[in-house]
Length: 610
Image (cartoon, rainbow, N blue to C red; front, side):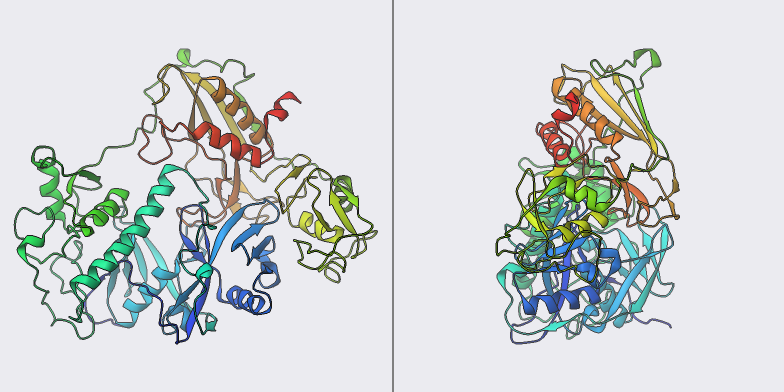
């Protein structure tokens, strides 16, 4: 249908909690490694709410409502999601939205990924898109939410403002999310609290998370102070639709008008602009401002004014979602002057190296490792694996089995669901190294949900029994020495690792057996300093590669593409001569951090002595 009106460029931080005496929609969300809260489906949220009513300190088995989530369990007391087959833990939160918003109506907005499947937007973006759709705006600019995309409702498409690439999007009806009444427990509202932690501790993720949260809070505070009682919420003009009339809020200014702002309120602009700017927002989306700042930034920056690097100074696209742009909004909103400069480019690769200069790594045999198309060795049966690592407990204590959450003195919660010859549902075993106790039938169920590689991982303390292996597809790992130094390691040469995995067909251990998987960005180059600890990390990475732990097949958190090769929670440094992306050098803690990550996968120095 034809959509009337003009497009929208929305400010971030507009979502708030409704008054506590009103009904609100409950959306449960989990935190991915890039600091983005991803919503569970409405059916899963209903299931979690039902369990919450019965026991607010219990656990939720997500596989009971969605078979694709069979390995996942949510612990309501710690507000974490636990994956039983890998031991991965992620924070969850219980978020609240207005009943008239998209989740309250059962409306889901999704975009089409490279695999021709559909990926739902984050909930705040979904609500923003639905609001613009209901107001019949022809387009929506998501740059103020940190995404450089334009939404066109007439063609139901999403366009990347930097690459001009278009993707289809769709609006579909689903089950409405559950409603609740009453006060919001502090432990279940955003932020969740100290228990949430950070799934990724690299500089890039920490900076993005803190900057985005702080900028949203300050922007909301500034808007309330500047426009309290006026009934007008100003919006900025999009650079792509220059000259288009911005849509006002209900009861706001007349069409085409803008609120008057004192001349002294402009941040770093040296002349009065033709279109009124918001105080402190620095008008980052205006291409004229970008070009003017970029041409003379190094000569006109006053003393004491920080110079922020931003993207696309000579282009027409917005600077978002560059981290510098978010920092600029934050500083301007706080009343600090900011001048824009050209962004430095990351140095991803070393200078060219001749073949004669490439040498083997001292103390490491060989220069290449390959994984072939062969399945892992399977044990005789799950019962044998479980019995190998446990001791039977004749008189179990009266406490919970943390897998099924039934008492150990009663039968396993998997009774009637899973049956195995020789294992009675009331049998209890104790793991040999850590001493934690579970129903034997629960351990068998956990093993069946995993990689079935003959190893077990304690769901309580994450202790690994046996040799843990992963689901990395076939590929090649090369490693050698190059005569260049990394920042922070000027006295050492550099170890370069090259991973190469081709596209292929998923095996029985993968999410969708028989289906094709993609491998983007290969070959991938990674770097370590050539010192004692760097060579130790290399040796352990070789062990992890042989055990298929470096990569896995899943959904990319950066592109949203499913059935693709992704990193498997062992961080690598892919930036050679700088640290602008957060995945480069100098980083004095990286080697210790990656050793800890390898240890969590069962790869330790003891494996090198075997």
